[in-house]
Length: 145
Image 1 (tube, rainbow, N blue to C red):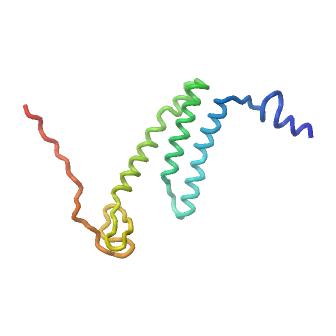
Image 2: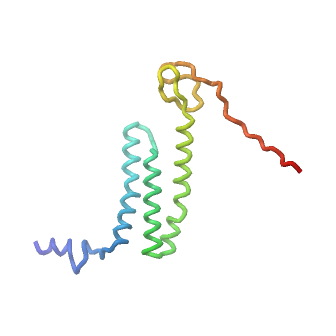
Image 3: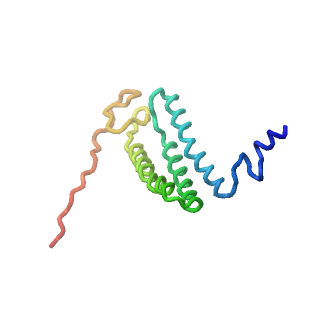
């Protein structure tokens, strides 16, 4: 049984890793980033089609920020820093796009279901949706000279 205890705790290292606060931060960042896999897998299996849920982008953002902090403040490795320095940009962009898409949904006046943008009829009850609302067009006004 001594071999088992040496495998887990040897020379003051747990599983052969010298632990400190930043190692824990790095492991948490990896766990957050890796958990995206399970979120996406679950959503895809549930709907039986490929889906990337909002939680995937939030976990991507949180995990990449934690790993960037680990790279900046502990590792100080330029390759590791550059790997996470700009990953937050598409994650935030996808969250913005998702929010705009949700806000563009139409509510059915008959049954109250939330219908996709640009729908002409409710997919649940068939009621014609209000198509009177047109998107606002912005015009660029010339500056007075």
